Image (cartoon, rainbow, N blue to C red; front, side, top):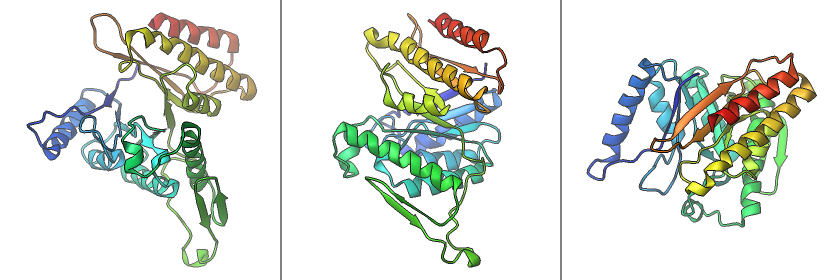
Length: 285
């Protein structure tokens, strides 16, 4: 099992943000020496607590203090940002860190973030912005000019004019076709987890912020993802090169515990493999 950490900063009021983030950087570099392989800082824009208003900038700074630890955006709030800017920033960060970035994305959950960024739409349209942004980002990373992406919420055009003199060449990530993508969710009916499951991306689920009666939602989430994984195995005969299942559980009298399962690339015995996954997930609870 690999160890990782999700960071949601809870700074003491007597300390400045500058002092706190310096301490976080020092602490995370020590964790790398202790064998921790991944770090995911949460991103919120308008919270006094849990405040990483630009997670990618923090990871850029942290990349200079670490050498092997994977650095994941946890998460980039796509409905509130222009997809072209996100694509460039994450690609640049992946280059700076030399392929250590994991691309966690989601719609975000802090109500005051949305009016602050002048995005006040109903839920379906808000989630539509998330899906459209992610599709555009992946297109930007995969394809060369010329193209024009016309969606409901954004339009991105990249004509081929000037390519002979190196224009129209937005930066690509170090990892191809893109850094490992991860999507969060807590509800058994989570739309984002379904999007991730259908594409073989990493699911992230945590129940530590939910009332006790909702802790059991981890199981239906895991089972739904397992159904998506099994479907993918049956359709293409293998999993993506790297596929991980994160499940966060709360046990009596303990702090939240994070368990991670990582699959092999190729699966030859499908029924045994799926049964083993189900047994693993059930055993966590």
